[in-house]
Length: 374
Image 1 (cartoon, rainbow, N blue to C red):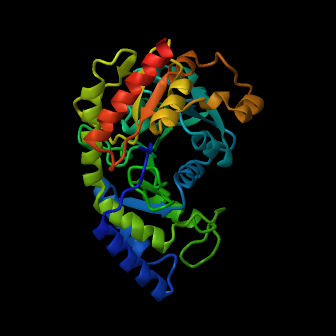
Image 2: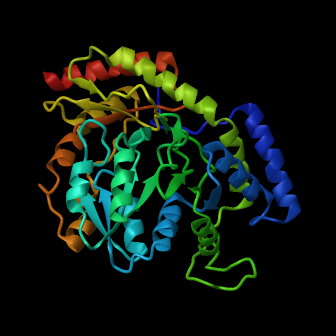
């Protein structure tokens, strides 16, 4: 039995509808800048209760466009060290300098106190990452602090489609929310991303920047790139969005199965979701006891039982060679992230995971823990 860590899901009816739309796209000859992108943007904005949604080629493009809007000009942007390298990379490409912040051990999100300590006269803003699909629990505190200091707040929502805190969707707390539609995500368009905002100027600028900086008259009014989402990707994304609530309900159901199954497993600590939150469960992270080697455990799960594990994220950004060499970061700079992330293992979670799969994964996990404990 092979149980993948992530797997996109398309029902038979969804496949049929997507194929019909792709046929219409191909026969129309309009492969970009057409009605499917416009419809996808409109429906994504409606779903998130924001004024504007701008489809782009990937989440990193959405981040870079948002950052360029604020004119970094060498200023600093604070980024959690626990994120995918695309987040700090976007700061560099936008002309800024990433400054890493420590991680909260309980939420895997940014340590807000450390973020506040890192703010200087050079700071332009912060990117908060909703790790694994949990909205950063201190997002309101972050927003209030940023408003008081004149800083921007961007949300990296690559994991958090449909995630909520107090009934409010991820991506609507800050100046912009940036989403990924990569194949492993909660919903996909094969590849692609989306920027959402209530800022009309940012939305207009995003539409220019995604098309080489050209305005509607096709005149270059700013520096841009080829960051468009094509019509076929938009058709896929539109149908995935229509099923997003179904996906989220299933992911939360799988998470509840895991929570029950793992509650009393020795060597496993679960991360808790507050009652006023809806988790999107892009990942299901658990914390291993210090005596357990995450890499060895993951290897045993995959090789002996066909269970594909994951992580969020090791190594943390500050320990990647490029950042160590370029910015002088080193081991010991962020002890919480370095220690905790070594022990965080993510179990398979996607629409196709069954209760029987969870029971099998539990047995496999217990067996591997016992083997490593000998």
